[in-house]
Picture 1 (cartoon, rainbow, N blue to C red):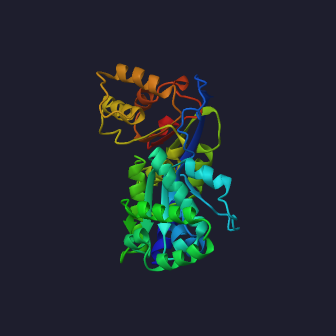
Picture 2: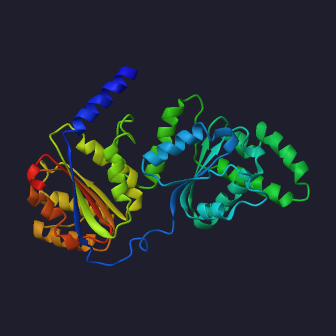
Picture 3: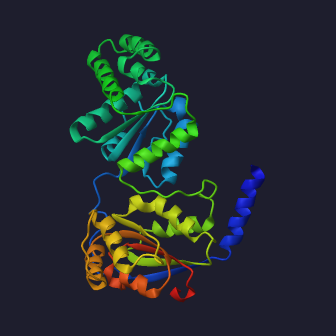
Length: 359
C-alpha cells in the first residue's frame, strides 16, 4: 500500500512538471456591486456540535476535515477552555449564522451541560427559522437520546441534583433531546467509520444543493499548485481574473480544477463547472452555464448570439467561479465568458486546455 501511494505521488509529480500554469489579470469588473452584500446572512454552511472530550481528536476531527476538503465552510469550536455557565456569544452567533447544524451524539454527550445548552439553542433556531439539523448517532441509539435511557438517564440523575433550582433548564434539555431524536438522522451502527463520514458529507452536500466532484484521496491538499490556486481564489481581490492550466492529456489538469472547485464553491455566489467542450455545441454549453448560475431548470436560447447576451446579463452582477474544462478553441471561450467587463468584481475563471494557443 505504501509503495503504491509513493508510486502515485511520483507519477503525479512527473505529470505536473508537464503542466503550464498561466495567470491572466483582467481589468476590474465594470459593475461595482459588493460581492458580500448579495450573499445569504449565513456565514457558515455547517455548525459542528460535539462533546470535545469524546470526539475532538478522532471521529469529529475526521468529519470536520472531510467537510472542509469537500469545500463546505464549517464552524468548529476549537476553544478547549471551559466556557463557564453561559455559552460564549461567538458560539451563539455561529449557530445563528449556519445553514446546517450537525450534532454528534456519543454515549456521554448528555453529561455535558454546555453541549445540552448548545443543543437547546440549535433546536430553538430550528423552530424559529426552520434551519436544517442533522443528528449523527455515533455509538448511541436514537431511542436512548429521545427517551433519555442508558447513559443519558444516568447523566440526568446528576443534572437533577446539580440543577435542583433550575428545573426549567433541565426540562428544556429533555425536550430538545426528544425533538432532535425524532429527526431523520444518521446512525453508524456496525458500519465503517470512513464510509460513514463520506455518507455524511454527501448528505450535507445534497442539502446545500452543492455539486461535488470526486477527487482521489491521495491528491487532496497535497499538490502545491492546488494550494497556490486556492490562495489566488481566496485573495480578496476586487479584480476579475483568469488562470489557464495547459498540458497534454492525463497530466492532472481536470483533477486540479475539480479539487479547487470543491474547496471554493461556497465562497462565490455563482458557480459552474463546464466540460465536454469537444462534444457539446456552444448553445448547449451556454444553456448549461445559465441554468446553474440562474438556478433555472430550463433556459431558452435560440442561437449563440442570444446566449452571449444572456450570459453577459447573468455574470455582470454575480461574483462567480467558473471552470471551463478542456477548452479546445479560443472561440469557445469567447462565446461563454466573453470580454473582460462582462464579469462582476472578484469573479474567477479557471480554464484547462491542451491548446497552447489559448495562452
